Image 1: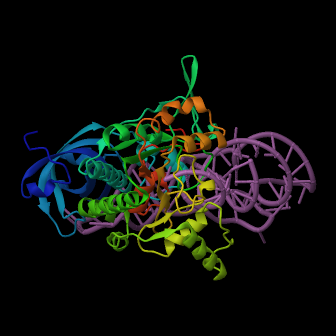
Image 2: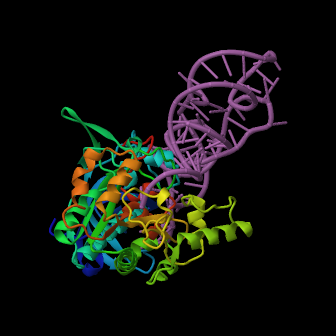
Length: 441
RNA sequence: UCCUCAGUAGCUCAAUGGCAGAGCAUCCGGCUGUUAACCGGAGGGUUGUAGGUUCGAGUCCUACCUGAGGAGCCA
């Protein structure tokens, strides 16, 4: 075909010219001797117009006989049209059918509604729908923005291992794998390793998959998810909160700047995203408890929250509903947090940690802390938590050779995508979600 | 692991304990501006599985399987 190849997204640049589109049939409407095939190519959807008297009988019949998702190379002239949702239509001149989907086994996902189970079983095909493609583009944008953010702020990407030797935070949530003669586990977090690279390089981050064998069946959990984790030598809890705040602000602004049409396709309320800006409210755990008890007294929360417990999901939802931007809750009781967190010098029963709760009930998207700098106290905590000391020798070394205050957090990519896209469930934020009871496709 | 709900045509769903149906999809026919097009017709069923109650079970009971929502745990 002599016409230049164009994507549907960029077809406006060729208005009035003939172009070649390589894609799939999205839907076909007909009105007598007029055909309206809709084509998609991964960048967008465009409607073709095929009057019977304008093309050869072979071309007309070929398009008339097309089935949903048949692969086609289409040649036609680009024409601006007010009636077209994308602004342009294609006056089809020629078509080449690469593979026609047989009607004996039609494409299962129709333009009509489907249930979750059916769509998940057909995830490999569901990805072709407009909404899913838009979500994946936003995900890609968020990942790129996160990398841009850290790369341009003096952080060095250091990749931690995915195969790890020992259980760090309890074996029940680890996926075991055979490692020759030994038992290994898929990583739950790269944190301990990037604490080491931070001591070498100053400001570092990791970006990769993590695995948790939690038997969680909620809209916020996957067994395999991606996490971005910065770690800063000499960083304090305050530095960390500032970093979390500017990262989230940057991500939202980037998506509004570059992915507005996709967010519109997804149906996101953009006004809510426009409000996301620094500074984010910072409240202590004690203040959070007070607000939760107030909420209970006003009948807005079912259970009365008692000081000392970790925040439950309904508690997080309630707290985040009090603000129109992410809220940072800091200084939890050390007893409900991990062994490696630095105690607050003013209140040793509290940990220098922070959870960032996204608005609109999306819950914790970032969790982080200042790390324990004292070798002896860390060793004591390892014993208190019944962790194998020998497995942590290298981690203890970091406190023997030039220990410094340092801080870091982890942000779950899927939760961030779900929040920015306004999705009901994280399963739509990753091409092939891995969940309890779902390993296929 | 616990609580709640659901499972009927390829899909989404109806059907008082009494003939198993509709829309979409597929096929045939009609329509020159359709926007999840529309109009007419056709084919399409082991009602999740195994028992039980009943003259009679998609419907009631028991167990199991699968899925969904929530809790806990977490990012």
